[in-house]
Image (cartoon, rainbow, N blue to C red; front, side, top):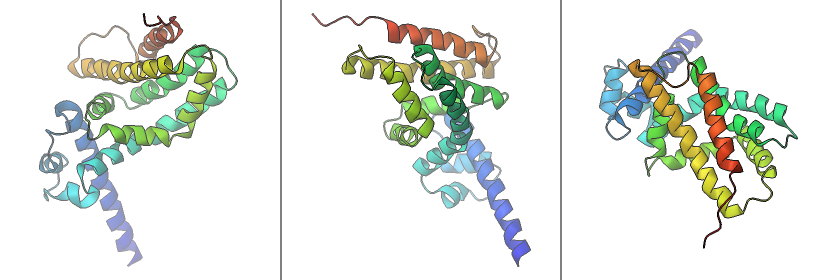
Length: 217
């Protein structure tokens, strides 16, 4: 009896992983709305077209499961970087804590990847983008990174910090998605590796944050 339960649990685990992989790819390539549960089930090799609903419930639950699938390795990378940057007053060190955990995770996944494009699709979906915000709010390392980063910007008005924070999130999201899309097509990219791409992105973001604000006239 115990053996049969273990085998069943293993099969369920494999099925869930197959569904998550198929959903991530289809969401990335076609958009969340265009990828139906039936299509995801078929792409995952499931004879039962209701498999997605059985294992994950609604589409929001499936999106959240994909985000959490990647959250742990990204959290581990960022936690190490935040510990190394602790006490630093260097804006670049803290911007790196925002960028490199994502790009290093994408590099570690091999090729092709779909996660950056998946995030870009979810981030522009009004019904689902709150899932990303919720998951980010539960990240201890991201909270520490934001606190350390904010201490480096004592003279920047709060409204400008909010404005540039939104710009930074969009730049990270869509720059990674565009590079991932180019790699999937076999197209040339400005930088040879995810590490180098992160360096270029960090350069741009440091410039964004250190630019003096122009006061409204």
